[in-house]
Amino acid sequence: MPELPEVETTRRSLEPALLRRRIDRVIVRDRRLRWPVPRELEARLTGAVIRATSRRAKYLLIDTDRGHAIVHLGMSGSLCIVARDLPPRTHDHIDVVLDDGAVLRFHDPRRFGSWHWVEGDPSAHPLLAALAPEPLTEAFDGAYLHRVTRGRSAAIKQVLMNGNLVTGVGNIYASEALHCAAINPRTKAHRLSPERCARLVDAVKETLARAISAGGSTLRDYVDGRGNPGGFQQQYAVYERTGQPCPRCGGSVKGFRQGQRSTYYCPGCQRA
DNA sequence: CCTCCCCCCTGCGCGC
DNA sequence: TGCGCGCAGGGGGGAG
Image (cartoon, rainbow, N blue to C red; front, side, top):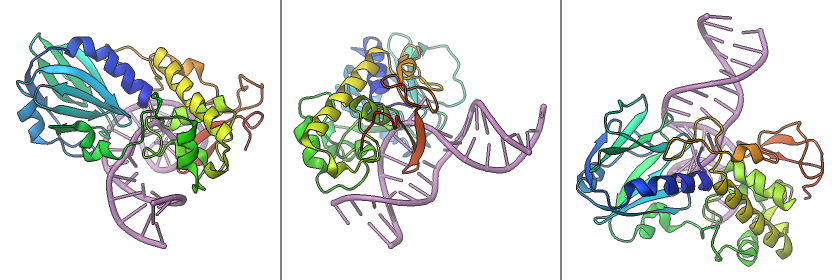
């Protein structure tokens, strides 16, 4: 489910309910996530005061006076603020009980999500240390993309989804950004000119920003911290639109498999 | 180092 | 209606 826009939308919608709250209790109902939830999480989080929320790539961080919880939503995870007396549903694996009676509840049917605890500088954590620059900052520009694609013969779509080169762009937004930049997803990364790299960077930024503005994408079950679905799926140009007209040239959108994932593009206006 | 492929897991829509 | 199959937003890790 969640790529960068969904994680950012979740973070923004949760933040007002979390700031300055003290954590009374942490209930872990199922520890079997992507990695086993460390017992250290409950031990250290209980009694901590939340100072801020932040995001790095697709990781959401709960920053406290004692350290940081690093949360990943995987494919099917969501975080919601609920009332303390609301009974948990199936797959509600973690509750963070706040001192005002609200609960931050983590729901994840597929359990590809994860929770970690880190003290000190969170960017030094092994999960975060090797990540590429944030896509919505100036560090991610055409010169950067051109440099890191030299010597890479992989298809540009797969390069966009490599978290060590570009962060936050998953399967939906890779297809959408390539359409926006009018670049064929099969194009070998090292063949892109500096100009086309710059255009692709602009397209990634624009696509992510528009998705955040729309509250992210809800394909099946994504909801933000208040339980609201996103609306960006209404604006897709190509994703899951096989056979429908391209909004730019009217051509028929095509889908195909690329590295075990589905890719969508318009053969009419996305050039190699 | 890069690339490919598999896997973790549950749910849903489809065809028969 | 029931069942088996393929597929789904992520990403670590091993083989080659």
